[in-house]
Length: 124
Image 1 (cartoon, rainbow, N blue to C red):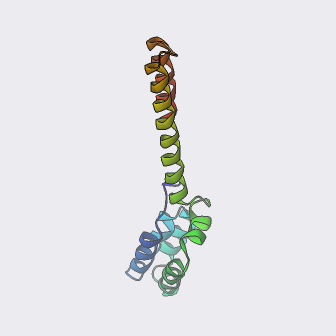
Image 2 (cartoon, rainbow, N blue to C red):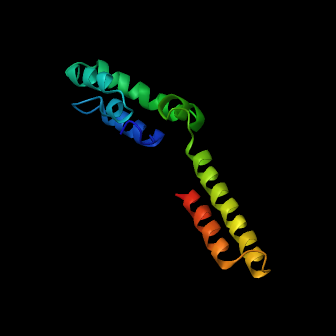
């Protein structure tokens, strides 16, 4: 769970759930188990409940970029997806150009197949 992408909405919901008898679920979710354990140990007091509400508001008040910087190692989800789309698009264009070379007789079927496999291996 430490490497999985964290959602701002889920963190806020778990923080608000901390107003129930046991607090700290949001801390475990965000990869802060020591704080989560502290919240659980202090659940008999109102301190973690108040802190959970304040943190829920704080999570919702942050924009996505700030939340990503604090809890997702600064890596936004959109840019990662955009990179994958750009990579696949570039490989698709290279495959089209390669196919044109094959159809024009500038490369053999064997050379085409080798290059095609190399390009497709780059996707995974």
